[in-house]
Length: 452
Image 1: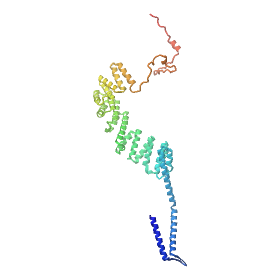
Image 2: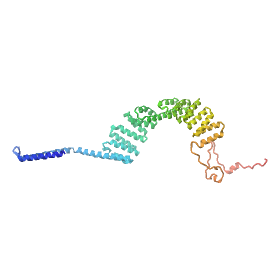
Image 3: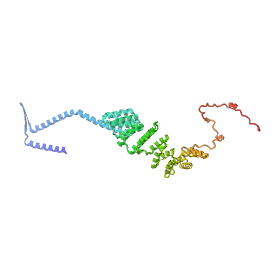
Image 4: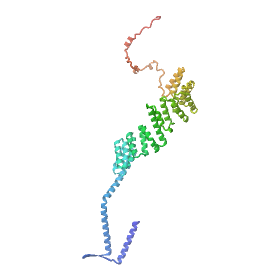
């Protein structure tokens, strides 16, 4: 629109000039020394316009010539950016499709010409790792850092993730410690660091990191609770193996009060107390826990406690029986505590009920031992047989009923090797004797005559 307006203005000016020149052509006189030049006004105007155009074009050409190298560089940069963008896109497609070798070649092809080489090198590092080329991966990580030193956190996080994926835990720990030094409150750095400590089973370092994880809300409540439970279970186990007698109590006191009612932690601690013969110390902990919530694991441990007050434990378990009358674990625990309280009839009833409810071999063993002590040997042996043959494992291999007969069809095969029991420790093996020697050593004697 603007060009059309200018064209109309130019035509109007030309027409106006033509009308004026027809009325008075005018002239222009140019004199210099003895020389003079006389021109019409129209010709002089045309020559002035043409001269101005020539000078303008000349100046414009000189200016364009001086800017030619810059324009060439700009064109080359645009071309390189276009090529690198195309290569980056194609490389990411190949990476997503699982063509890792081709993806790596595309990603590094124009990386040095890309306006964002950081993206090319980080993606190339992933492609190299997927091929198992750890040296090339680390080389691309270094190039990514060199291309943009200000992105140290992003580059190092990618490096830590790749190292974790390859189970290079020591290298990942070093990378994450460096990241923590430059970004101490970065939540993702702390999350990865906690994961590394957990996989390395560096429980002391993880325990030291916990307050910061809780303060910065790196994990949600459920995740943090699970992490703390795993941590304190490991610390309790380590304390239980320590020769220092106070270490176990110290480890339990270090458990947060909110987690002391956790079934896993409480079962571990009570089990370690029982191993050390401190059943009386474990009893109130388990009793209080069972008052608030049901747990088969805790009931099983409670039934195994050997304290001076088995009747009190029996009362605690019998109160639970109202809500869980057919639970085999509870019935077995009741039977065991009845045995400790010397209530033989009640113990037998509870153990028989436990077996009827589907209890394992332990119930058969406990009841069999009770019947054996009561003089019911046959019933005890039957319980032992039932406990060993049909409970807690696969059924025995079916065998023929007449396996011990001497019929030709059931006789041992001649080519079947004879299996001999090993001689007792310290005894010399007995060599097989020839039949003749054996006959000579043991002559067959005739039976004595009747009446001898």
